Structure formats: C-alpha cells, structure tokens
Length: 186
Image: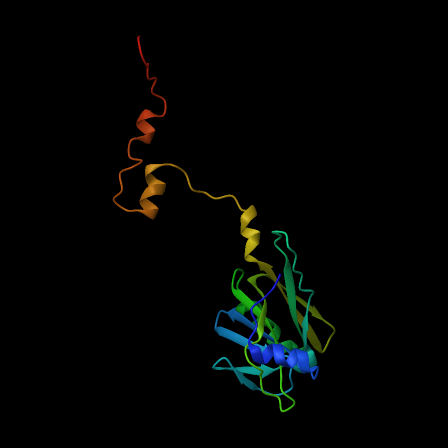
C-alpha cells in the first residue's frame, strides 16, 4: 500500500541519515496521553509529547492488501506500583489510539509530517508486575473489527424513529406483515 508522504520525509529517507521515532497518542478518562520513543519532551503537531525512551514498547504492525482487522499493542515498562490503580481506572475500552512513524533531524526536530502507522480502539489493558515495577500493555484493535459485529437495526417503526424522528415510512409494517393479500382474481 502506498502512502502520501511529505517531501521532507522522502528527502530524509533518500539521504540515508535516519533518526527514527515513534509517537503514540491514546485517549483515557482524564484526557489524551502522548508519548514518544525519545528521552525528552518534544513539540509536534501543536502538542507536547512526553519522552518515554526505551520504556515504550510496541507490538507488530501488520499491513496487508486484504481487508483484515489487525491490531497491535503498546506497552510501558518501569511503571511504579502506585500508578497501577490509576492506569486501570483511566483505561476505557473503545477509546481511540494512534501511532506515527517519524524521522528526526540530527538536532532532534521532527521532519515534515510523520506517517500514521496505526489507528484503532483500545481493547483490553494488561498489567504484569515483578515486585517493584510493572509493565502495562494496551491492546488496540483496528476499526475493521466492527465488520464482524451484527447490527441491531430492524425495519421497524421504532428503529426508523431513532434515525429519523417523525418519519412514518415504517409505521404500518407491523399491521401488514401477517396480512394475506390476494392478487388478481380471487
């Protein structure tokens, strides 16, 4: 799959002097959390991203030419035990999360616009502890996972009122569903 990339991004790829970085943004109950794989805070896209360094881990990112709902994981290791409760309370299933692949200049500035590598919704958080610190792993699923979810929409007056209040297109469906209609000569 080809992606649109800014000229600065393509020029950095061709130059060969690559300083890659990964940016993660996830919605939680108290607001957005933005971290990246660097050691210091950085400004990009009008937002401040907190440096998590090697503490930030990612699962595999799969991309195929088929319509497949694939997911990934984002993990943060070295979290103090007193923050576990906060992480559990803040995570909300279905909250959005996004990953970007970026290139940096030797000075540490973001080159052009990073490429969005993944966008999905939070599935389940997992916590693994070893006594003094723990690792929090967040599983994200692609929105394509919804293709397998049955819809509760019915061709009834009640369902139509949810989408289009006042519409009477299905008002008489229940009255005619069991009626026997004779066509032609009776």
